[in-house]
Amino acid sequence: MNTTLIVFVVLYLLGTLGIGVWAGTRVKNTSDFAVAGRSLPLIMVVTTTFATWFGAETVMGLPAKFVQGGLNAVVEDPFGAGLCLVLVGAFFAAKLYQKNLLTIGDFYRQRFGKGVEIFCSLAIILSYLGWVAAQVTALGLVFNILTHGAMGPQTGMVVGLLAVLVYVVIGGFLAVAWTDFIQMIVLVIGLAIIAISAAGLAGGAGAVLDVASKRDLGRFLPEPSFTQLAMFIGSGLTMMLGSIPQQDVFQRVMSAKDSKTGPWIWRRTTISGCCLSSSWKTCRWSCRSSSSAHCCRPSRARRPPRCWRPRPASSRTSSSRSAPA
Image (tube, rainbow, N blue to C red):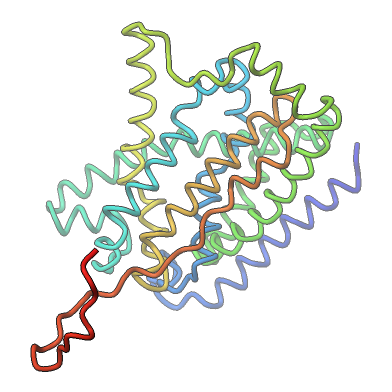
């Protein structure tokens, strides 16, 4: 049993509880609790969105699916999930932010009435059961592995779930945003270290990519049969379209400090998340060269062009007119 590692994990959990208590002192109303008072800066929205789409099922579950079926088996995440964020940023984020709502259920009530709000809220709750179960199960598995079986998976699930509930109930979404910020720093650094170490153990990224090529793990399109095509399209569309009207996405849109932060933040998160997720799948199989992280650097955001307004005719001069192209 690695006592040092367990001590660090315990300190980490205590730190998250401390963040929850600190965040609780800043919660003054419902808006502070639900959407962090609509005050999160760009970097905080990036990390909390990234954390939501890079959870336990991505780190521990999807690599196994990739090994078994290649890219074809993981069409829903990161590809479907990434396109979901692109669609949210392109068509929904700015318009939803202007409505100044707290939950996606509020939008349904405002647009369609109380009955639709209740029905959709119940559907959202049911849709989260599998996702939450994956996170809790992963927590129990981590504690079980860390203690070499001294703590059972069920006990680990209870301990981890209680820790999460405490800081969420006390600090609300502000506590979630801060813990996500810290967790993403730890996650990215940790995955980078693992990628470098695994590359050395596997004999270099070239050897791994050769084996991946022989096993055809890079094949994305399914077999040309009705069943395979239906499963492929259904998996992608379910994640891509089904995740748009969800509370976690809506909450992160509404938590941004202004309407300019939300719409284009999803593109940056999507690029980095898809690249890191794809690299992690290959790394978990054996290794993925850390040089692949270079593709995750999104281009610097540009300011949107200002609207052109024609000057009065009296102020125009022939010298100010540009020559035709």
